[in-house]
Image (cartoon, rainbow, N blue to C red; front, side, top):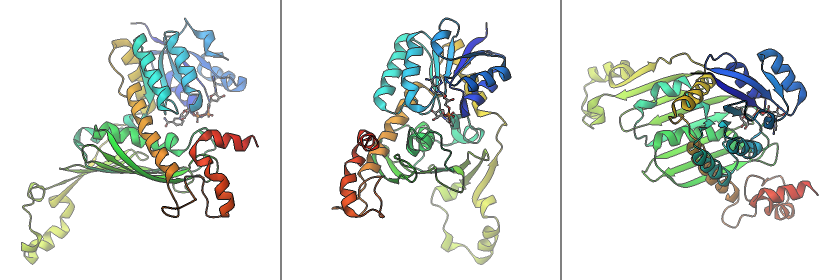
Amino acid sequence: MSRLRLAVIGVGHLGKIHAKLAATIPEIELVAVVDSRLEAREALAKETGAKPVAHFRELIGEIDGAVVVTPTVTHFDVASELIRAGVHVFVEKPITPTVREADELVQLARRRQLVLQVGHVERFNPAFVSVQDRLQEPKFIEARRQSGFTFRSTDVGVIMDLMIHDIDAVLSLVKSPVTSVDAVGVSVLGDHEDMVSARLLFANGAVANLTASRTSYAPARDMQVYTPTRFASIDFATRKATVVEPRMDVLQRDFHVNELNDETRNHLREKLFSELLVKEEVPAVESNAIEQEQRDFAEAIRTGREPRVTGADGRDAVAVAEMVLASVRQHQWDGADSRRIGHLASPMLPLPMVAAMEEWATDDTVILRRKAG
Ligand code: NAD
């Protein structure tokens, strides 16, 4: 079988990493690196041996697949044009900033029978992969994702930028529709929300608490998953996972702490995490998650099977992200009659200004109007 002829479109921070990795995978031929910025494409072309190209249209007919790593607000335009031209698409997360665009992209790829994969890279994180099969029917999940402000991805807020990773991972585990969301968030440095805490309720009774911040001095990416039979702690940053499995008598409510004699209590205190709540450090297979997603993309194209993270998965994550955003925008900071509403409200602003800003919280077009004066 011939190699997959691939282009990476948008070679900024993440696109560079994609291109350098693609150049090392034997099943892939990195044909071109595309960027509207001359210096970005020229520098990377030298490094990878690929052709520097200003616009992907020049490549139609020369490539089988493309990795789209342009800013999120451009994903729909770039990906839809590629699909219409018969190119398989791997698009970075989030698939698009709106469900409406995501739906259209998914339909388009289906009609053309092309692979549409989304870059929810944590699904390839060795820590997640090492435990996911043991996490059947989770009932409670907590996830925290925080970073410093990178001054990139400012075209969207922290929900579409960071929380979307955890939304996707949670949906892949819970496998039930989200029925309601309660969220609060604030913008710190721009017009979009930068810190958000959300509680998701699922039709099957599961609950997920998600926190995301991109203005944090303490980077972290972790998740705790509680199932009826075990608990797992996943650290996406260190790529380590720990599982705790209660002993059978504990699970069956046949363990009666008040009936234990002193000797047994002392013994179990010492052996709590080896005999009663048995703790296991799960060894993760060392692997590069981005390389694994590219290999998955190439394999899906070659065999016709679905990629691990489909366009529909990316669409579902955006649908939930929109629910979180809607809840953030409706939050009333001072109670039921509050005039401070949504992520742009600030306790520092006098109320007359709040009144003028109330409008903003409703949609982004108002924010744009404010910018335009
Ligand atoms: P970036 O700003 O560093 O890079 C974007 C690049 O795209 C720039 O070089 C820009 O010149 C180029 N570009 C813009 N429009 C273009 C067009 N129409 N055609 C060709 N080139 C174009 O951004 P980034 O941080 O690399 O993020 C890019 C995307 O990757 C975003 O959607 C972001 O959400 C996603 N991302 C995903 C992860 C992850 O963990 N999976 C991490 C970071 C970024």
